[in-house]
View 1 (spheres, rainbow, N blue to C red):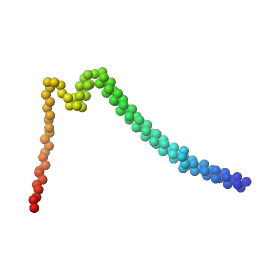
View 2: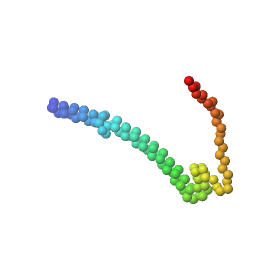
View 3: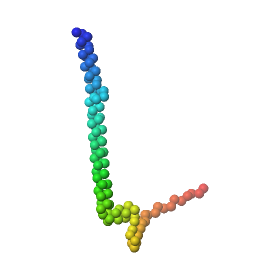
View 4: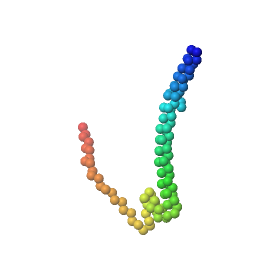
Length: 102
C-alpha cells in the first residue's frame, strides 16, 4: 500500500511538472497564442498592402491617365511641348568656418 501511494505521488508530481513547465504546458500555450496573434496581425497588414497593390495594377491596366500620373509622379516624366521648371528654395547659408593657420 505504501508503494502505491509513493508511485501515485511521483506520477502526480510528473504530471504537474508537465502541466506547468514542460512542452505543451500552460506557459508554452500562452507563448504560442501570443505568436499566433502577432502573425495574424502581420498577415492582416500584408493583406491590406496586397489589396492596395492589386487596386493600383487594375487601375493601370484599365486607365491610361493612371499610367500618365504614375509616370509623372514616380519618374518625373513630362509631355512633349511642356516646360519643366525646377524651383529650388534657397536655404540660409551658414557662415564659413575659418581655418586658423598657426
